[in-house]
Each structure stands twice: as structure tokens, then as C-alpha cells.
Image (cartoon, protein in one colour):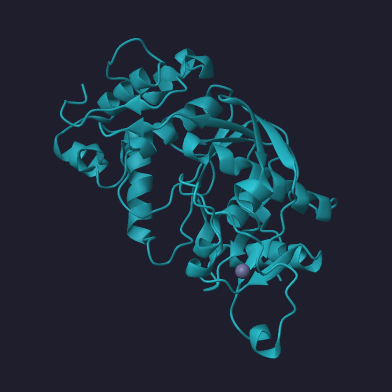
Length: 329
Ligand SMILES: [Zn+2]
């Protein structure tokens, strides 16, 4: 079994900051995606670091190769080039399998046969923020012969303890995994890899030292920290494997006038539509840099010219309203 892909080995010597942008190719980039890419690029590059691109194309129903190719074109058009080869999650099945097996062998996983309806039936009525907390129904279950041959999701056993971490932008965060999410899925019943496993393994093997992403993922970070620590503890001498420190910086979200984060339905924020209106990449970058507090007014500018002005202290923590009905400039 392939365990480590040579090009995944953490970089040796030279630059010490490795950022990354990890989009899912499920449509054209919108300004929310560009905002994330820009902040991530500026954070890594302003420290003299590298910036890697990873295509998170694990969902075969929603991911398209054509979107991924368009995404690369868009990043170059915006002036946000990446370093090294593009990493495709869809090509890393053997790697994820290796780490899942390691967790299974350590007795840290179990199969779950619950349907969505079963899980929803166990949810407390006060949980209104959309989170689903798995109650551990299948943990410790003795499998009968039929179940042994039935496809099941694989869940990770999480500890009933508080995980604390320091976010570079939002400060100290504390989450009890058992209360926040419960034992969570590493591999779905249909065989698809869960985001949490893939992202932890990839960030580690790619030598990523800095993750910049939207604050909607802030409270899922402890899941990833715990999984990474678990994998590290199981493979302390794993050559070129999961080692090293990782810093998180979450950023505020761009929201529409209803206060909702931008999404693919917000067509006026779609790069394709903006290009049709002859909006230049410098105008887009200038507008987003202004909204991020990096420059005092909206002015067309290249990402590289923002580097001397970038500082996380300038970026607000509250979400940022971006209007539909006004020109970008
Ligand atoms: Zn279950």
C-alpha cells in the first residue's frame, strides 16, 4: 500500500510558512471564495512563505474537473499564483485508507448504521444552530453476522474533554468535542471520505503550517486538532508523515443584505458575471482589500502590491456586508 507520496513530504529548509487554499470545485468562484484566497495568500506571502493549492474534489456528485480548471485560471487571473503542484484529493484514496486503518487498528473507530432520521430523533430540541450531535448510539455495539457485511459509516471516538486552541484572529477557543459534535464520521456509508479526515491528513502531509479560512469553520477546528494529535501519537516515527505545528487564522465572512454568507446563488458576486461586466481583477482585489481593512479606500491594486500593508490586526472580526446593487468600484 502506498503510504506517503514523495511529493507530499514536508518541505525541508528554506521557507517556514506554508499556507494553502483548499476550494471545492462545485461551481465558479464567488467573491467570498476570492476573499478567503486573498487573505490566505497575503498571510503566507507577507511572511515570505509558500502558498499551496489543494482541490477538495471528494464529493463525486458535486465536484467537476471543469470547475477545478476554471478555478486555477481564475486564481491566475486575479494575480494569486500558487507554489508547487496542485494536490487533488480525489487522487489520494490510498493515503486516506492508510490513516483510517491506523485509527481502526488502534480501536478508535466503530461502524455506525444509523440513518439520518435515527440521528435526528436523538437531537435535543434546543439545538437550533444546525449542528448535529451524534449521541454515540452505535459505539460499543456487538455486530451480528448481517451487520458485519452491511456497509456502514465509520466514526471516530472523541473524548469528553475540552480542547483549547488559540486562533490567530479570534483568540482562544474552547470546545468539548463530545458536546459539540459527538463521535464524528471519517468515512461515509457510501465510501466517500469525510472532510475532517482528508483535511487533517492533507494539511499534515503537505507540510501546511498555516490555515486561513472562514470563521464558519472556527468551531470545527478542535475536531481537526484532536484528529491530528491522535494520528501523530499513533505514528511518532512515521517518516515524512504527520508532524509539526499548525496555526489557524479564521476570517470574517462576506455577507449579503440578508446577513447570509455569500453563496453560489448570489450571482452578482460570481467571477463569471463580474468578468462579463468587464470588472478587472485589480478592481476586485482592491474592493476586497478595502473591505478587509487592509487599505483605507477602494482602489484597483494587484495582490502583490498589498503585501506591505497586510496585517491581521487590520482585519475586522465582524462579518462584512457586501452589496449586490453597487458597482465593485
Ligand atoms: Zn450509529
